[in-house]
Length: 226
Image 1 (cartoon, rainbow, N blue to C red):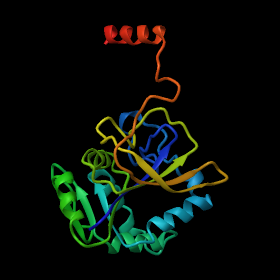
Image 2: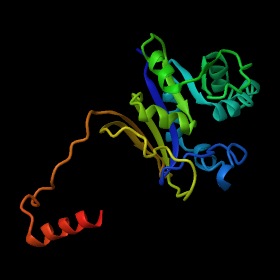
Image 3: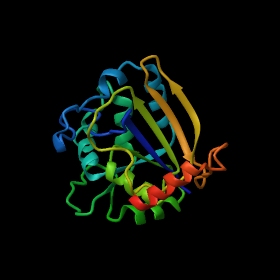
């Protein structure tokens, strides 16, 4: 079976919009495009962990907008400073999810997915390399809602962006996660890997099993205010 790995660059408040440059996605008036570069270009932990993420066999799983950004850059990047990753991206299969089908698929080894949850569920049943997302907020939300994510590798940057597209939304399937690996860089970047760990456990905190009359009154008040 194939694994689905969400690879995400986020701010401390969970924003993942336009990490690579101002022109990537200025929608919604987002004005901080390129917020990853000042740290990522020199951060040793970022370089090491990105190398580990893309050092395994993989294919890319992208939304249409992210695919179009990649397709306009990586086929022309071989021989440049990012030659190694460019060669990888140009060689592997790129799965692009699009509801409209309005996408130029001339980048070699591109496969279109029309129903991301249904199609990815089928891909997971096959033998093959991991499916790694980059950006693609809507796809990530759909995969989390459908319970199709096997691993989340999140790079948290020491920034508050305030507004923008976020890694998680209210459609995400509730579940517990286990931290399997983490590193903190001198810049404050945190690279962490999480895997699903079953249902969420919940209980009353120790010492609160016998509520006071005032606590019982508070609960009754909450019921009336709903």
